[in-house]
Amino acid sequence: QLVQWLQASGSDGALPDIVALGFQEVVDLNAVNVVVNSNPSAQRSAAWEEVLLTALNQHLAAGGAASPGRQYKILKERHLVGILLLVFVRLDHVDHVRDQDGATAGVGIMGMMGNKGGAAIRLTFYGSSLCFCCAHLAAHRENVTGRNADYQNILSKIEFGSRASSSYDGGSSECVTSSGLVGSSSVGILSHDFVFWLGDLNYRIQDDVAMDEVFRLSEGGPTHWAKLWAHDQLNIERRRGNVLKGFEEGPLQFAPTYKYQAGTSVYEKRPEKKLRAPAWCDRILWKARTPAHVELLAYNAVPALDLSDHKPVHAFF
Image (cartoon, rainbow, N blue to C red):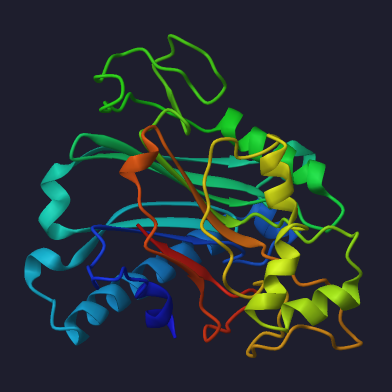
């Protein structure tokens, strides 16, 4: 099942130079894991890293593309309680990667705990600076302002300790940080040539659509999904300029990715469970200093991967 998630590919079947994988809730978000004990998070993150590196390189071998230079290695890992971000790079590009760094920010309980937050990794790749941020934002259909605030809080908190050169500013020592400060030696998420924002952003369908209708449209196929787009909270908030301003996203040409019965492709409606309206909680967006330098080749969900009550998404650029 993992291979179906990892094999997102463009129309020419090219292998990606960089693979960034984001997870949420790799451990239970209970009080012990959030406040007291970080060991389960570190152990689970290490286990996922090993499994995914093996799966990536086995996928290459199965496709006949397993020459040593085309295999992947882990470049960097960052985790925060249940949030995990892994960045892999092909070995034939390793000598052209520098300035890698990572940071995390908790924005959950009391605005600081790691039950919600972000993990980010940045690097310079052949002279262009990239940043990946995996986020898990506030839950519940009505809590749009909480999600918007979490996004802004992650932006303001995550700063990297060293300056990455970029094709945009010539590698000067001065930068504009994510909080808008000029002259700092630190680097914010938005201070990169390319930014990719991914994760369980938790935006739902507006409650002006009845829950029964959301279920009906979600289960009805592509023509029905289109009727939900106008009611998607993330689309609405982006149009208003309240969140992810300047970011782009591909069309949502897949069924809402939440909430399923784990182990199935059936939305969760069992009477003993909390009823949640289906939604596109799981998203991948990007922002580029020069938009023409990014082309989205694929953006989809992976229904066959049923380990969770979410369906994972993948994108290929």
